[in-house]
Structure formats: structure tokens, C-alpha cells
Length: 596
Image 1 (spheres, helix red, strand yellow):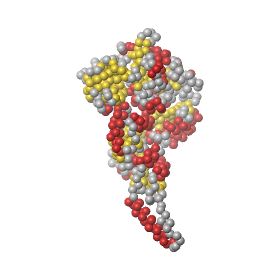
Image 2: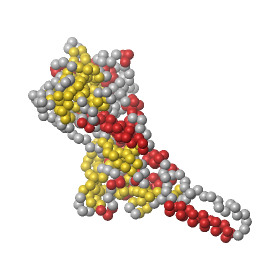
Image 3: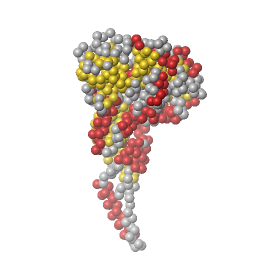
Image 4: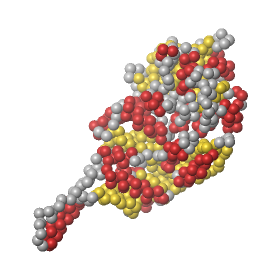
């Protein structure tokens, strides 16, 4: 199709504002999907996405739409995730588009990730079409949503289209606006093919399937192309588009979105955001490619050590679908062979672990998440530490710097006191507050990344009864008094439980872990000591009492010295047993404690 009749657009929104439902309606209205095949959350292909009601992967789909002027247009939609952890996925998808539908919930208004995603779209100079969704809800407030668009995002409120994706209201107006307002793709003016690989997945039969958007020239089967950042030359086997199932086409022309398969077998060869160009006559790469760096690290180990190779190949396949996920092999005394994995954030970590369990049937255990610390040694050398096991001895450390985030928390007015208390509890400092409208405020705070790792988001939701939302961006490093907390069982350090924490929080965390371990370590014939230590100083201690045989049961009456002799003999035996005894901590105990 000629470029003037092509429109590439994306849908951006905060989580749960109705992106996927709207894309379902667009597919149905353009006849891409028949009523018989229609189902809710059609583009969310993973069970996890359907269950949680969130989008994890970007999904491209090509629709043909006959507009009111009688012309037929090819609309290429990319449904993007809304969560902060997947913002790189969103930015890559946006770089393949000329416009974006910004969906705002009429009942909840503009939220934290709406703001972040609009900034991403504006950075790419996209045409933004605001859509106020869920106008059929009884507590919808369209006028207020329009006002927020103007005041918070500087988008004219009267350009917003009121709609209800669930009821099918306003869908025709949205399609007409896409045709009228979003500009057609323009060639970049280079002499040969330029295409952006914005995503990929692994197919057992075809190998690596790369999602592409053609910016210049055309892409067809049999063509020799070069992948810029990996420097590989490959032959294209097949090109096509999605509707939403893949279908084969002769070629992809300027401005079109689809997929290509080539003789690429290894996930590592395709980098997301890479430029694909003609091997014989290469054009310069497209702007915007960047390697993404994980922020949160955790060890993942197979529960059954025989599954190590299976876990390794599963991670390779998963990495293909998720370029932000990184891993490398490591070993642990307690847990055996496994991998140190890096994630963009907490939701990302949770999703990867869940996908390994479901899609690859892996029984895995994950260690306590940590972040990258910058350690300056006393001799002036710098070191990056993402695993507590690699933290040098205290005597060699000059200073430790921890990563900080700038967090934006939007909450109702009545929850502002609770939010401030939560931020200070997490060692954060409040930067400033902004009033968004009559009911809500936005707090901007600097918080250590380490502190928001576990329960920060959940607590915001529970304190604000679900009305609060947060978004964060990375804000460099700051020197801090961090220490390594070791857990000792019978005097032996357990590396799976060690963590790097702030000195003020070390004692509380040590006490919690010691109590948890006391519940799960099985009793032995001798008393087992559980201790939390910082360096050589014990900050918390518990003990598992011993099994005790009543050795004095056979004495009836008689002299007390005889009983004392038997008890002393038992005491000696237990002492000898303790010095050579070895406490085997069962796998279930590790799982229980790490869950806590």
C-alpha cells in the first residue's frame, strides 16, 4: 500500500485504563476479527496478562479500515504495556509510530504512568490523540478529565474524544481521528533499506521472529540484510504482518509494520531497537538504540539441581522475548548451581519468575533481591557489587554508594500524611508536593531503590484504598551507611540469606530472619544457634531447642549424685555432637524464609 494510506500508532495509558479493551474494539470494528473469534483481552496472549489484567509484551497488529471518505487505510497498531518497569518496551514501540492514542480513565483521571508515557511520546515528537475512556461508569467525570489533560499534560482538553471501549461508544470517532490527525510515514531519504527491529519472540519451527517497522526502502524474502549492532549478515526467509495471528506477505514497504524471519537461531544475535539494513548497500543506523541496564538483581536456582541445564535453556528462550532480562551463572553453598539475574524492576522480576514456572515448568527458588552498589575501596579503586557475597571486608571499604530513585506518588488529599510517613520510613526525603485537582496531590521524593524493592507499591495501594499510584525514574547514586548482614546457623554463614542493608535497619531485619529461621529449621539432637551478624558483631539471636532423651527415667529413688552423673554424661555427648554436627537446612526452609 502507498505510504499516504498508512497510519502507525500506539496506545499508551496508565495500568488498567482500558488500553487492551480499546484495541479489542478497534480490531472488531475494522473487521480484522470476526464476532465469532472475538474474546476479551485478545492481544494479551499470555495467561499471566489475562489473569492480572496487565499488558507485559507489546503486540503489533495490522488493520484495514475504510474511512468515511471512501478510501481504505492500513492501520498498524502496537498495544504497549503501561507499567513503569516496561517503559523501554514502550519507548521502542513509540519509535516505530507516528502517533499515539492517550487513554485516560474518566473516573480516575491522569495518573503517574500517564504522565511518564506522555513525556516519552512527546520526546519522540508523536501526534497525541487523547481519549477519555469509561464514560459509561456512574462516577465518570469527563469535564474533570479534560481539565487535567490541560493542566497536568498541557494537551488541549477539547481535542479529547469521549469513549467507552467496553460499550463500543466513540470507536468510529477514534478511527476517523487516527486517519485525520496522525501523519503518514515519510521516507528518511536514505538510498537503501532501513527498518527498526522493535521486538522479537522465539518460534520452535522458524527460529527468531523479529517484529519490524520499515522506515525506508522495502523488505522482502530472499533479501540479504545486515543487523547493525550485532554486525551479522542474514538472509530473510519470510516477511508478513499480524492480524493478530501472523500471515505471510510478499514484501513490507515504506511505513509498514510486520515481522521477518531469517536464519537466526540464537536469541543473543537480535538486539531490540536494532536497525536492519541492506547487506550490499548499507544505510546508516536509525537513532534511539540503547542497551538497557537492569536495576534489580536476584539469584534464581532450580529446586532440583538436575534441572540446571533445563533452566539454562529456558532462560535463553525467555531472554529472546524479553531483551531487558540478563543472567549469568553463579553457585551458592546452600543452593548449588544457579543464575544471577538482572531485572528492570520488581514487577519485571515477578513476571519473569512466574513465566519460568508456567511456560517452562521450572521449579525455582529466588534469593532476596538486591541492587547495584558502587563501592570505593580504601586504595581508591571502584567496584560494582550486585551480590552480597562479593562485598569486600569492612576494613577495605572506603565508602558505599547506593542507587536513588526520584519517585512520583499521586494520592488522595486525605492520604498525604500517611504517604509522608511511608516515605520517611523508607529513608526517603520529600522534594515537593503539587496539587493536581480538588481531590489529589502529587508528591515528589528521593528514595533509595533498595527500600522500594519489596512492599512499597503494595503499601501505597493499601493506604490509599487503591487510589494511589506511583512512577519512578533513576536519579544517580548517593553515599550511604550500608552494611552486610550475615545469617549464621550453628556458627556457619548461610550465603543465601545474606543481604546488604542500611545500618539502622540491619537489627530489625536480622531479628525477623532469625525468628523465621527458628520456625523452619528442624530440631536436632543438640541446640542449634541462629544468629544475625554485622561483621563480627551479633545483632540478633535465636535458638532451636534440642531433642532430649530423659536419661534419668530409669532411676527410681536413690541418691541424687547418680542422676547428676547421668545428666553430665549426656551433656558431654551433646557438646561433642555439636562440635562435629552439621545442620542440613531443607529446601522448603529456604523457600519459606525467602518468601518472607
